[in-house]
Length: 259
Image (tube, rainbow, N blue to C red):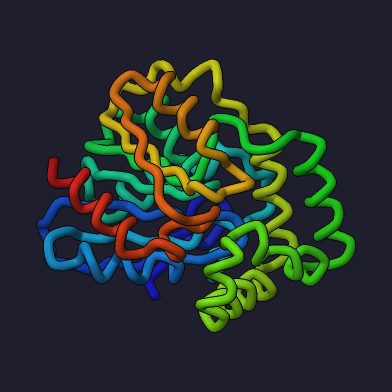
């Protein structure tokens, strides 16, 4: 997998699709890697350059030595686009990736054609909660949080129907580097974009999971109501909706990108 060096971190990425086609960037959630987008990459690669990457501190991307914040994660995306010579792209981020997308919509709208914000919020959780999770992982490793991940990510019905998929996703969480995961928890602890997202002028699709206990439908409605050119769609899924409702998610994404 190719990689670039960005401010002390090595960022791994993958591209699929025909050269010269419009580009869509897919940004992963906390505790996952770019493989979470396999279904969407397959659905889009005939007509788009699909750029996936492991967020700093995740998968095969290192965290670097500097503190991580949402601005740093957003600038990583811009560095990838610059490296590949892509002037403008659509961006789709889920959970933490959706916060990165909001930062890009606020600070680099000239680089975006469309913005998809999935299972995310302008403020996810609390600073205290993220600080506690970062401390726990730094002290006890990824096993400290992995056992409860399935219930946060997927609905009970999906856990029962697709145990192999759930086990694969939780297994990847266990393999994440604790320091990189904790650094991104620190970034989320400080990320509060509620006073800024009204300035996003990029056409936006907000995707919410009907059963999501982490970033709720109400969080999605807040994004829809605050971002001027946004609409909201619900999927019958929990937090990782692009996996739990993969076909519906891909159809929404294709329809929005082609609109």
